[in-house]
Image (cartoon, rainbow, N blue to C red):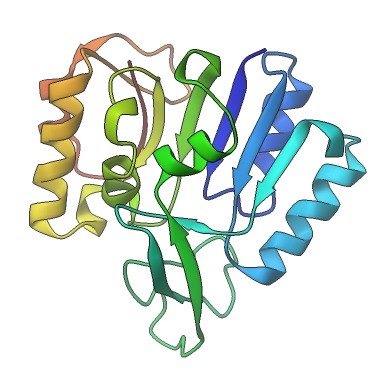
Amino acid sequence: DAVFVDAGANIGTHTAYALLGGRFARAISCEPEPKNLRLLEMNIAANNLSSRVRIVPKALGAQAGSAVLHLHPRNKGAHSLRWNPSYDGQGQLEVPVVRLDEMLKQEGVPPEQIGVIWIDTEGFEPQVVQGLGALLGRVPLLIEYAPKRYAADDATRLRELLQQHYTTLYRLGPEMPAAEPLSALASIGGITDILVF
């Protein structure tokens, strides 16, 4: 009965793949941008997954409230709460923000049912991880780790949080990854998908 949590679901590519792959019973997918949200709903329906996916039309962060989502005019996967993702992008939208720990509690998902949390929020990953609260160290995380997108103190805080609560790091890619200590985070400069547990 493992649950796949998609933090920054976009149009649901990862959600659909996770469920169709047979390793997860259901998913919770969070996406705040209305056009992406509509495509996410259509994608889930087209793959006959509607009964297995709970879509949450909100952004995730360290604090509940609202925030400005900066819209990329061409790349609908690059919208960001962190900054304006495009030199020519003027669009923005105020969106509701929830903490991930509180949202999962409201959805009735206990830590032992969470198979993995996939966090891809275009530079807002440190804030999403902070919003895990007491779930840190209790659930595995897949993170699009991009330290150059973070403010210096955000990058430091994210590394500290992960090092305090997790022991093993895998850098995901085309090659079979090897286990590394969490201290290896300091050597990652580019955008890298990581698994920590």
